[in-house]
Length: 392
Ligand SMILES: Cc1ncc(COP(=O)(O)O)c(C=O)c1O
Image (cartoon, rainbow, N blue to C red; front, top):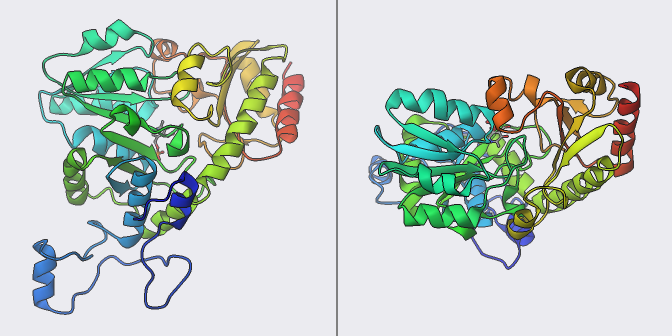
């Protein structure tokens, strides 16, 4: 793919080469397999002697376009598109590990990543140590002779805690560990972990990359070396992205920059407003000066992102009344949509965590998470204000 100077141009101008029909917009290669002109060509393609598509689980022009473009936007050499964000995370975690290996991970994770690390990987003898995001000595102390991989999610879902990417990148290098980042909340427009030595970056493209709540998808991108086993695992185990979803997600990358600008400016304005509202406390947004890691946010993020969390006076019952009195926002666990979405993480997305686990990652029963959409900011604030009043 060609490399232009700016993110937007790379996201818009890079696409697979035109077919003989000279279409302007890329077609969808909705086909399970591809044909050969001869038995000899089939043999040569299977033997990797010549390039060629033959089966969409292995590779497809639409999923390749999406994965390679995303890799380029992340400053990485290679990419693999996956059916969901979780298949991307699973692939990035298991592809380079074997029984007896140990991983170090940030404790604040999306709940399914937490389930993989605590419930699934131990079945194959892969152990872990969790470290709190702000425990600098803890990271160093957690490294063992068998530690092969460090996994982090930043900003975290839903706590919006940050991991110092430069610090972890250095630690991973010094200890010869693979450094893996779930960059779902930031997107490549806001943060590029590869600048800090990250080897593999996972994305749930279901979120801001799609941006309109239409398609599930994901990707792992990274260096050629780290991706070798990811390619192998993906081809053999088949978490492949459908051509139709790949087409949607690649098109969506074209508008990621403009959408993220607006998501972030709306979220920032909402966060500033919420800090002034009586009955609302602990408003959390990476670019608010009150965020405990504001300096770090400014250092490694271009903007503060599209998520805001806050707590309501009146606890769980008030939160439920507040959500039930919302008129415009969608009550849905998804995020990164044009439409503002509201959730109560403790009883939904993170309900599989015990009360103690929730408390350790900063989730309280009074916490509300908002994925701020692209509606007019005045309408967003008005919906919050009305629901607050009615929930008193
Ligand atoms: C940070 C993070 N990573 C991964 C995922 C999983 O993505 P998907 O639902 O596409 O599997 C999510 C879903 O919310 C998420 O928030």
